[in-house]
Image (tube, rainbow, N blue to C red; front, side):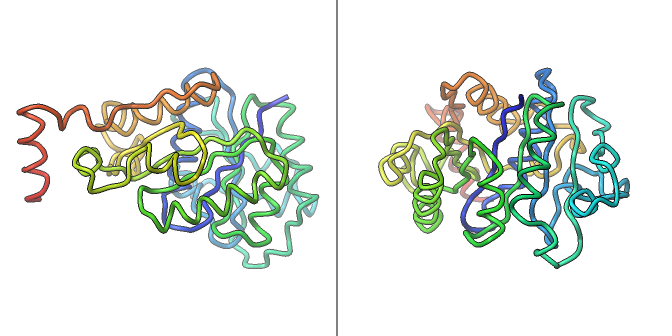
Length: 262
């Protein structure tokens, strides 16, 4: 059976879907058969981010309502053959997918894949509860800003209340230069505020949003950070990529000064 992992954040705008898409590609590149499921009805963009929106024929609501078989709705990635996407519906009728039907779909997918990643809707309303109830593990995405971390605290409480023990906290959109100078919350700050261990730190970087459409994607710092996060999730032991390393020393100070002028 596959590992079912919900990717959640509590608030929108922290890069949750980008993290989901990148982890899906990286897990697949590591030889893990992976399916990413978009549970955000009406506001779906996981298929767009992965460049699959033009290939969508059926979606998750079609599967839930029996208009197609599950395999018919899955779209295979052109970059990684072990990655599939189950797109969400463009309809705004969120009642079209209830908690039981989503859980059944995740259970069916778990038979044929190693990892099922569920991209959770933002907020802590019904969509969040459906997505969380369908999975056994969670990736909690936050940014190094106090408002985002406070929201993450709330979500952590809800995840634990739901009986979820394996929770991987990820700091996204981190700037190594500001972390080094203390102008941005550090990993230790987030761990202290949330009472949980940080499993990954991912930089603010354009290449991550462009995925493999960027020539620099595979060479980028963000890709390396996501790979470290993926390895940590697979092993159960955090493997943090050091985002401050290139800003240390004389040349690092020059980089910091140049970044401030941009």
